[in-house]
Image 1 (cartoon, rainbow, N blue to C red):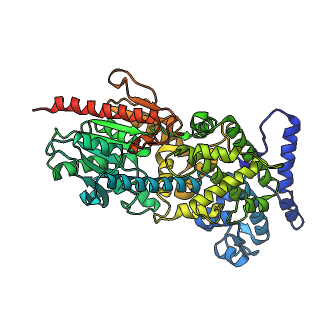
Image 2: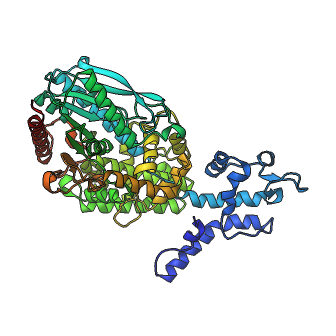
Image 3: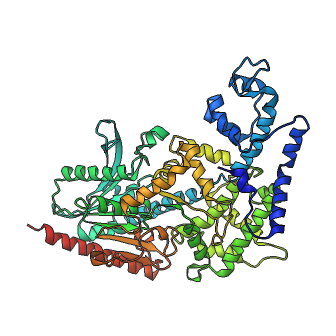
Length: 602
């Protein structure tokens, strides 16, 4: 990776602007080089191969990562003990003489600061919003279940022993996978089976107690079953990299096939018990893929907000976020979108202008964002507030697109800029989350992702899957994105090698395989209903156009609806378009069951 070469080739055709940009880069590094030149005569190689050699020289990639990420000092004794330096008499066979150690370490810190400018990914804020949405939905589901007289006492929770490797029978290791069953609506012995598929998180017992699919189960006398995804929730073996190699969508589909057999044997099911699968988001893709790969096991599938098209650079995510912020039909406006752009421009300018102390105080950061990586973390986490609000608009909490845009466009006092309204929005978020400060430490985020205990809401496992199968990196490198250009593709793909030792160059091939294996957004399947909201940022990766033949009516696009909104139970406040979409889903499921009854009648 030619990092320095990339920096010294600024984009654009204006000679004066290019010269000014180059001058800024040179000045920013001048103090470092000047300090070295006062003591030593040095020669620079044409590349930064020294940094690549360090792990081999000292025999520890983790030590190199620690030095790069924390910029701590390494003193002579430690340097000698790990083999980084040798004595002047050549007694030790290491690469570097001790008189050059200060040069190497100074250059390493300067160069790593350049490298780490790009080290940012979707921040913890978006995942915290996602966790809050799940908690709120569970509370609502609990209330709705109680209102309809449904009790958790009707629920069976169990474990099934699954092969760790379905496709390698020589490996006999197994793990316990959690599932739920609700028999309350089931019309024995031939009632259908509605399968709820778990995704990248803890499976809730309310997956078989509340929701639109549960309402339909009551209508059709269906047995409700749900399976937690391997390596998530309580179905975890270990989150170490060695074990995570057994985490994949293919293994997850094989889990579903084995679970179907288990339930069929337990309840003496026959071909007359028709299976319909349901899932949302990643689990929605699994629902579609289960039907595609195992059509003899599941008769039809509903795939809500399902990103079936794997994508390395998912810039379209923030394109939809920006478009939604400007959409008056969902509470946005062009004025709001403009204010968002201006606020991020001002925030980025303040950080680059050396005002990080003031910014840290304004945004009540847990620590001052002095380093480039911490500044990028701040920018990402503030952007996450917008991204999460759009993705889950009107689904939970007081923060909706309407409320967000009210804050960003409210009458400003004399001299107040969009920057100050962004500060107020961050304050609103912290109040909502009951957080005393906004975490912006990149090192802490990295430590959080490296934890092999499930304290990251499934983020570590999910990031692993993005590296090995899906991509889905939400970038901000084109003009359509209203946030910071520091949200780059490189910033996120680098984490694959840093966290899991997965080379960046393999990602494209991994994603290509996924699309070839499942069919991308042009799947050759039938009896799969794809349901999407048109303000859902994940919508571009789903199937939004109808097919031909049997799949002529395979897509439902809901105006003004957000991520997986159709899966919730009916609410009085639901938009008319959402209510109509649920009616379409109900009609399609009814048609499938009638068709199956004709196929499998005695």
